[in-house]
Image 1 (cartoon, one colour):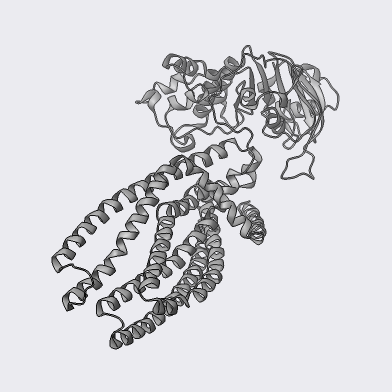
Image 2 (image 1 turned 90 degrees about the vertical axis):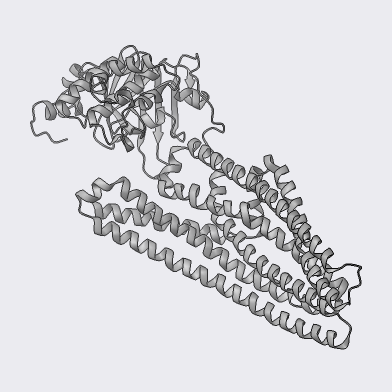
Amino acid sequence: MAFRFYVILRSVMARRKDDDKALRGKMNRESIAKASYIFKFISPYKWYLIFGMVLLFLSSGLFMVFPFLAGELVDIAQGNSEFEFNMQDIAWVLVGLLVAQGLISYFRVTFFAQVSERGLADIRKALYDKLLTLPIFFFEDNRVGELVSRISADIEKLYSAFSITIAEFVRQIIILVLGIVFLAITTPRLAGVMLLTFPVIVIGAMVFGRNIRRLSKERQEQIADTNNILSETLQSIATVKSFVNELLESTRYRKSTDEVVRISLTYARGRALFAVFIVSILFGCVFFIIWQGALMVQNGTLTAGGLISFVSYTAIIGGAIAGLGNFYTELLGALGATERVRAILREEGEFEAIKQVEKSEENLAAEIRFEDVHFSYPSRPDVKVLNGISFQVQPGQQVALVGASGAGKSTLFQLMLRFYDGYEGKILIGDKEIQDVELSCYRSHFAIVPQEVILFGGTIRENIAYGKQNASEEEIRAAAEQANAWEFIERFPEGMDTIVGERGVRLSGGQKQRIAIARAILKDPAILLLDEATSSLDAESEQVVQAALNNLMKGRTSIIIAHRLATIRDVDEIIVMEHGKVVETGTHESLSAIENGLYRSLARLQFSGDPVEL
């Protein structure tokens, strides 16, 4: 079984990689331009960005004065200065510039921090809210580890771009432009020689940048796959240990991690080659320009101070060009890492706004009707799960769904909760199609107690209050008492403040079920869905939980999925399903009286233990 799970998992991973490769094949200039979508999260903080850019320009301009002053110091010392400055004057100017540079740099960094921190926080919030509103089938196609990677690793790439890379990229452009303007005015001949290197550098940056961006994206994808393995293994650690498959999981993780290393080293080699390319060209040009400048000093057409200033500016310009290449590749890497974030943000959610949902006064406890409903899951469109289902549930009625696994019982619950909308036929609440009711309001009238209860990792109080966030302490305790949960809660030293652990691991199965029932009681739903809520419990726990369920079902429409027929003998109606169809309906007594009936066969098998061929 574990091996089959592993094979299926690997096939899903391979399919996802193929999809990603197809997406990469469509990358072009238009897709790069779409990255500007992310900047809408920066617009609320545009004044911080504007002031930060102004200070960045001032800081860069002040920085470009230092090489000029260095050359002027040499000319003053040799008596060749064109200005009426002495050494002390230059010293005071340098002190003033250093103080101004420090103050400007401080405020520039804080302004950019406001933009990056607040903007990225808004992206995280928008991404999380979008994930909450996406339909169930999205999570069937995307694994938890991959989604967590998108929120963490990919946004970190974007954070680096907003907080450092963009500002430094603009800074290098300002330095480059100011330096070239100064050199073009003072030494146009040497500046012309230097500018001849530009086409080579630009072409090289384009070639290297394209490959580096591709490798950066591959690296992020592989890291996401590695995180998926880690997440899946830890979530299923009990299964791993029970099948003694620690070696299998370790091998999977090692292979994925080794692949990360392989891609990362290729990525690093690409960046290194680009750096070698830039540095080699620049250093060659710098030494050639210095040689030309030395000849001009020898001929008397340039002062020694002028040569020092020119060499300083040339070195700064060279560093700016190298920085541009480096920051350009980092920006491309950030673009590749955040494409998936933008893909999630563009997904169409079930509803657009996250808001506090209040139950409307609209009566949704009316009759529930399924009329000739056909359905296939989006992930398996060729497999019909429901084949013309028709039945009705009257208000306040208790109805049980019975049938073998795969008959379509859980699918009915998912359609009733509108987890999927792509069905044929009609599902009505009273005289309304369920799709005509606002979704969040519609779901607020339902509560479900599942077979496998998943609790949040907080306290018992927080888990019960999840059904009604504004509930008072008295209401929470009353719900716990009705669910027969108070008797074990009060035995805990911390009582309601007891931490249940991740997924409720510190509680027994029966205790978790009663917490889930208390949560549903507190919500006070019009329609209750019970998905085999006692099937995994021992006899003693089942009795306690069944009593709690009876309290919960009083006075409300209840639909129950049950394999243990003893728990549904007293319901108002039993609907027997087979192969996505309703084959029998009636009470326990009427169905048990049908010769060769499916329900009678199931009942004989469970109650008498007779071998019956189903």
